[in-house]
Length: 185
Image (tube, rainbow, N blue to C red; front, side, top):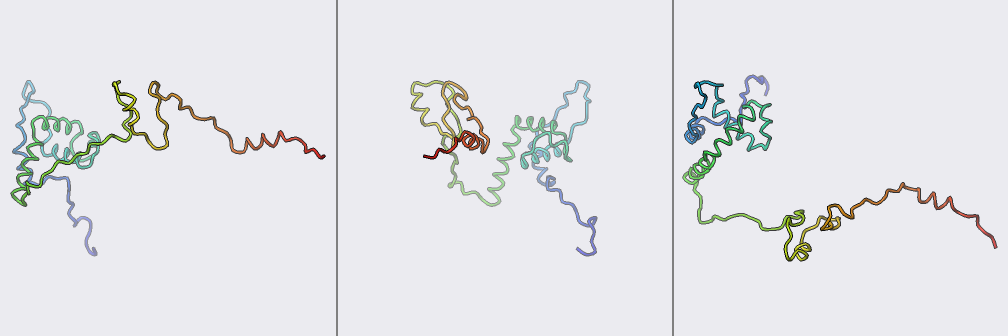
């Protein structure tokens, strides 16, 4: 990149919602009604900024409070708006609209639909919560983690005391210190 500076390179914000996409999303958002008794109050954070913050959290998996250190709105604002929009069904509508738009654009073969699921025991699920008539049979089927003894059913941690620690070489030192003088016959 000889002859160019960093000022010449445009910065692409991957978290910015494009204008054409935002127009479709904005149609799905419920209209905000000001509930302040005098009609005033603090200015509301724009919906677009909140949606960008929500999508940032959902995509990265960061905590809501981590938004305070970003260019978005405060985490509490984004979380409040997220809960408001979930209750209004905004994200369900976004999913349905997006699915239908993709079906028109590329096409979805609806005959090949299937549910994905798994019905197995959790490997470290532990014991059952309540007593059942066939308790002893169920207890034997519980998964145990490798290298661990079974837990006692009537006591948490019963019989799980750690053995006393011995210093390396101490046993040998005691054995040789008690040595008797060799007897010659």
